[in-house]
Length: 204
Figure (cartoon, rainbow, N blue to C red):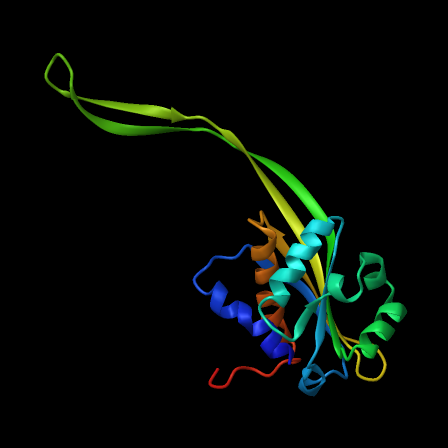
């Protein structure tokens, strides 16, 4: 079940600030919670770096036995991009779902933060016995932000291959591949509930 496949990130992410947000999402009009009752799912992370791909897929698959990294199933990244070929291979091996995470954009921005003069009362006595009023200058500096835009899509292999849900996430200054994948999974899970693809938690 996709709920079980993605809920693992909630306990880990509690108490941790996240720089990831879902900026847009789409749900198939005829998709419902029964469609996400999946038993064997492949996670495919598509990007320019083979190392990052494997790290990300290992992060997800290591947290749930129902999730399997694509590099162990399809053996090479090109097979994961061939929908017909990959779907046939997966069905033969008993898979009924696919999660695809794809880096679609990377943006770098630089901003200048101007300096400021900070004043303070000095308890240092002057020669006339009083107290002074001084300050110090805090120089300006540049800040650089890197934003990664990732598309996460959920497919069902039951019957014809169907796209059930897709979301676009934005992550600013990610600290690591593992943390970024974790945050995206958590945000995607929450958005699927908001979009009605997953049932809301009881008591909420």
